[in-house]
Amino acid sequence: MKNRRNKKMLFPSTAVLLILTLMAALLTCTPGKAESAAQQWTINHDISFTVVKDSTVLQTGGQCVSFTGSLRAACLEQTSSTIFVLLYRDDGLYVDFYRQGSKELVCGTFPMPFSAENVSLEAGVDPTGKILYICCRMGQGSGEVYRIQETGGEAFCIAETSSANVIWNSQAAVQQANTASASSQESIPESKSESQPNSMVSSEESSAPESQVQPESRQESSTASVSSAASTPQQINRIYRCSGPLTVAELQQMVLELHPQQIAGQETVQVFTSKGVERKTGSLTTGDVLQDRREGKVETVQLVIPGDLCGGGRPNQASYSLLRSCVAGGAPLSGLTAYAADMTQPSGDIAADSQPELTAADLLLLKRAADIA
Image (cartoon, rainbow, N blue to C red; front, side, top):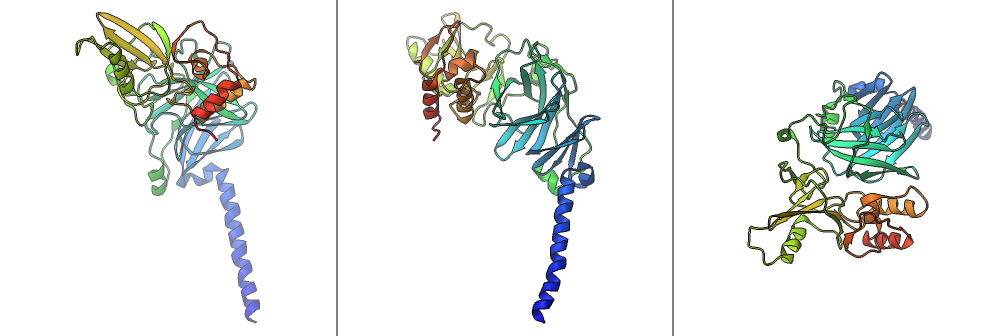
């Protein structure tokens, strides 16, 4: 009799558990039914997001697409109908994108060097409409421009030194009234982004006065401050390949030691990002510019960090994956990215018209430098 009673009690509890599981699955793909515990974002009448803790659900054209991570910013690049999503995961910000036409989801492979707060995202294409770009910026600053490289279903963001030819043509996501519960609000801070649809982004066209530009955040260990127009590098004299990863302080010390005859205080050595923002501490990245003032002359040198293809300051998994794709016959690398990938060359000046030949030897050296098993 006792065993029979246990069997009768087991069936109702199992049925209740199954019903609850089905209800949870339905709510995941129907954000409208979970508004009491979610944040809502919209780009237009056809594109909306629902954020519940560490998951973001995109609804577009009757489709339901799920992203891992909480939404920080998003936009629609109108020419290619590509939706870019800036997501916060456990170890930082990632850029994923979704192609509406092919219904293809591509996930970012490495964290972006930005804070998770007060960041906006805009997108554009080159004049041919084939190469995609994004711009991440903090507050009203001019931000950083990245070219999107896709390989094997993964997205890479390659820092660009120039965005003059980019056609910025995006609609930004706008956060709606916050309907999240108290527990959700703690895990998803309210975004303060004020980007508007179809706004144009470039250092020349930014309407924010210089005094309002927010500091760049390239890495947790580095800080940058806005410099005056008089001290911002205007013309690159040469391109120099460093011997390996360096900090700002190490580079300044090296340069000063090359000119021991200089009277203290008569020579100044500064480092700027490619956007003209002074980098005072932290690691150097490929594309940074050294400005050396001495004897009434100014020399500006653009720096290349071997193995730093993605702006991280040193060889890493993202740079290795990008070079591996190139060597395997994928999209070719060019400019400073190609110079950084040319691991077989010694440190020293780089001819501006040189064309690195990237091979498996470069890939092996980068893999070793990044300590990848």
